[in-house]
Image (cartoon, rainbow, N blue to C red; front, side, top):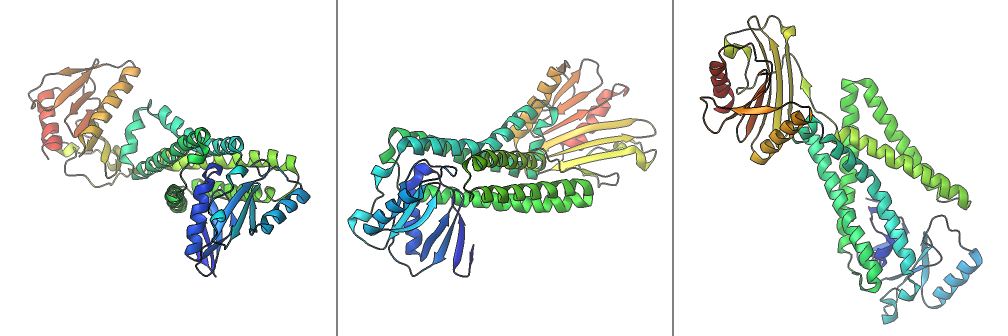
Amino acid sequence: MGINNKKVVVLDFYAYEISSLICYLEEMAKKGWLLESISNMYAKFKKIEPKNIKYTIDIIGKISTYEVLDEESLKEYRDKKESEGWKFLYDYNNMQIFYSEYNNEEFLVTSKDQWKVKEIFKNSLFEVFIRMLPILFLAFNQYISIFRRDGIDIFIDNDRILGLLFVIVYLLIHLVDLVRVFKFKVSPYKISTSSIWIKFKSRVMALIFLMLFIYLIVSIIKLNFIDNRAGIVVLLGVIVIGATMAFVYYLANINNKNIKKNTTIASLLIVIVSIALIINNFIVENDSKNTNNSVDRKEHSLSLNDFNDELISDKDLFIDESSSFLASKIFYNAYGKNMQLSYELFESDYEWITKLNFNRVMKWFENQGIKYNEIKTNLPEDIKVLVNEKGSNYFLVSSTKMIELIGVEDIKDKEDFFNTVYEKIFTL
């Protein structure tokens, strides 16, 4: 994003990536952008004439926002570097960033004798862990959800699929960084100096942040139409996160070490938990259901009309539909003059999803102490039929569809009933 010869970019890096960061900054200089300020998630540049600029990053003291260096010693160090031809640019967590327009060989590589391997390793490991906390929270929540029967519903909700992809990508990026951190500890001076990884993950993170922001705005708008209070809650959550992050930024610029450290950590925890809860509520557990008594019938769905029956009244019909590009599910319950028809139909063009759904549902029933047994019918061999011990509920399953028929113990002619279900569901 660039405005008035200024440019702010998402820049995801850790202390162990000093060499890669230097390479990235030098590439930006060749494109006409000189670094102005930097954080661990963004960098600000100003427009210059494209030129070869060399950077060096030296670590003084501990890599920390809370460690306040002695001003006199710091000035002495910077003066010394400037006497060697470097210009002081920025201090980020006690990492001193200098630059020079010289092209001498001595400026090609960072002064590695200034690297503090143990300090860099500890800082990078801590940063990776802090960033992984929200994702670990979501992963644990998703793991717990698999024990619920609706755990498979992630496949019938585009929002949850998108959220799961974000979680997986985010987790993979940080797992790669975790491996690279330990690799740095073993061979600190053999770490790659290429900027490819920094640029790749920065672009991915920028995309995730953008999509998440758009999703939250859309969710707030949708929730305001559905439930005014829910929309307000999400809006307040976003405001709390924004205010807390602004407060953290303020704390990073005050000099009281104890206040900064304790309050910043507490504030960051608030941000982490808030973000995790919002993502969990609106991406991982969000159910995009459309419940409407007047919902249109699908051509392949069963209805009372298929059994020569009709509704007593419109109030006696309940339909709940969910669908995504991977799968769909419909729950149908209707009270007719002669019978009650209740079923849940799941279908997907991907056989592995249908199989996974079937196994999950059977596992859930097993955990509830309910056993289903396969029975023989006059239906084709590729249609599996199962019944519970009470004979009240049946499952008809194919490679791409499965339907649970609920409360059908009072139906006398089961064979004719199954044939109708097969014709309407599995032959279309």
